[in-house]
Every structure is written in structure tokens, then in C-alpha cells.
Length: 184
Image 1: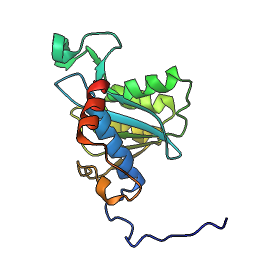
Image 2: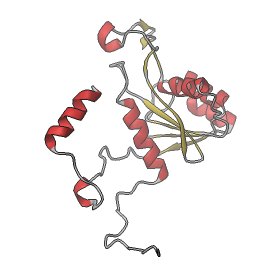
Image 3: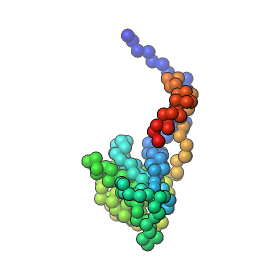
Image 4: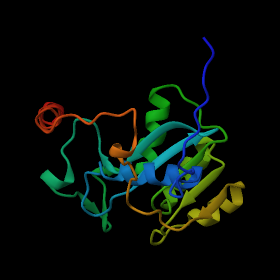
């Protein structure tokens, strides 16, 4: 059997994101899991366009969340939660994954402690779209030779038009609702 090459009548979509935008949008999605009302931050650690780990600011595994139990405040900082960068580094460590030469896509400029942890873990590039107050991150990144890039915040929408894909068949409404309910 000889395969047939079928070209799409549609051009490549204009909304197809660059790699940097793609990973920043994943960081934005990770931030939606945050458990502290004071800040929602997401971090995606990437090596050679491969997601190594993700993290969001949240309580320790098995601990109560700030939304339910309140923030534990010390010097105007919530100490109940780990920051997104620390959780992403810990996830990589738990699974024995190296971060040497990795890039960190973070929704916010890392705080000073997270910047130092990223440097110590081997991260060589940090990409953000917003700043964080009172951080010495830039100074430490510069001293360590870590490249810091500030990009515009990506759009907050996902482009997925199921009805346009000829090989896809939407679930009937009643089945889709049942499956979603099972996942919760």
C-alpha cells in the first residue's frame, strides 16, 4: 500500500505559540493549582524543550491549604507554602531528574531565595513576564551567568476548536458531563 500525502487547505494557525510562549502558558496553567490567596505563581522547568517538572506555590503535601486554614505570616510573608520554583525543583529531585542547563519559565520574577535555589540546581535561563517585590534575583542571576529574559504576558486563552478537526468526534453532551463528574 502506498501512503497518500494530503495537504491541509488551511495555513498554519497564526496563534501557534513559540516555545517560550508555550512554556509560559504552561506555567500560567500550573499557577491555577496554587493554594495561597496572597500569590498565584507557576514554574515550569524545561531541558531541551522537554518539561522536566512543574510547580506552583502551595502547602506541603498533606498539609492544610491557606485557603482553608489561613496563611501563616512571618515578616509579611506566608510561610505555610513553598514557592512554585521550590516545588518544581523538589519534583525534579524526587524523580531523580537533573536540572543542569535547564530553563525556568516562571509567572513572576523569583524571590531571592528561589533565585538562589534555581542557580544551585543548575538552571541557566529564567523567563518571566512579571516582577516580584524586593527581590535580589537579578543580581544573583547576573553574578551566576544565568540569562534572565522578560517577555510580555502571553494571552490567557487556549485555541482549541474541536469542530474544525475532521478526525475528532465530540462526546455527546450527557457522556461528557458524566466523565467530567467522575474526574472530580
